[in-house]
Image 1: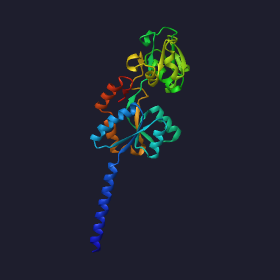
Image 2: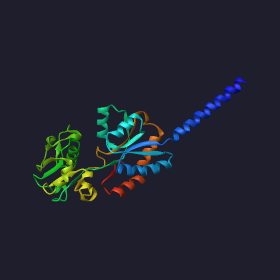
Image 3: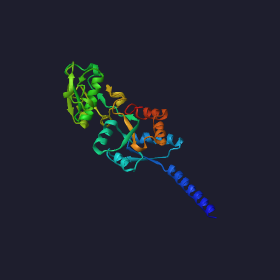
Image 4: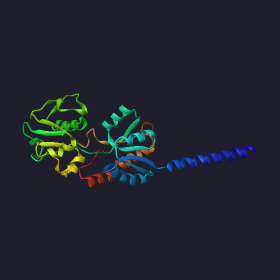
Length: 264
């Protein structure tokens, strides 16, 4: 009698645990994004992921701090909105235990001009506006270095400044300006580097109007981040697969027309 009762209890306990596991699997993954292109793209990712058995709940944020805080606290399962230099800085400053599991998109900074059609057309002594913050100013200088127009100190890194320029055959003059004000400098300077959001606000189209753009494979490609403890879980691979699909690539290229580009 006792054996039969124990067996029934074991079966009941197994059934309860199985049901709990099934319910846990049915719980949607919460993925944090910032409003705008990241949210638009993840709506497409969500549709594809569902075909692979993943349920996703998209959670939108209006700032860059909260998505990482929410991920660390367990309120999110992952987020998609930041590039690696920013993530690395957050990890150093706040001690987050995060892992980057897949590249997503890039918002390439563009260089614009009303006076020349290409960077090679810049004359000796040309004045070029760049953002006055180290991260974005460094991005622009790396573009000029990649095009062979300047050379930077080997150890300048991603936060290079005009003081790190060691070779400048055309004697280009880099003028540091607040990023939001750079569109207004196009009448006065020979060229200016303008972040995508400010360029679009000023009526400039990065894919058509920029005379040069940062590479889609630059260090500033955005990524999907998860907690370190979750990086090898099956759902992570499925999520990255859905994002880095040909369907999502085509959507990005069609929807944003060069203002946002695939980084995978």
